[in-house]
Image (cartoon, rainbow, N blue to C red; front, side, top):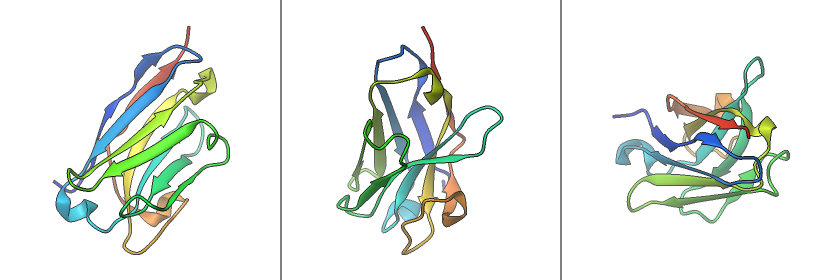
Length: 124
């Protein structure tokens, strides 16, 4: 299976935390940067965060970087995202993506494989 698979999300409270996980096949995961994007209704897909192979290089989008943590476990081909202090404007579909080889992209065109997405709704 080439397409990564996201888990987590759902209906969450403002001020709470979000935890998402993404699993990919070893063939697509090895050596690749893994990223998270989100897309709210009527808006363009927005970069959230990404992490390079081995986990040492991490980078995030400016709108969320003070609230997020990204990690990966290369032994089990998974990447996780935690977002704290949730706001209603965090409501979106969140996507996991596998970057093209030897890249650390911040835009969707830098990613080769995409998950189906998982819905996150932040509301009281």
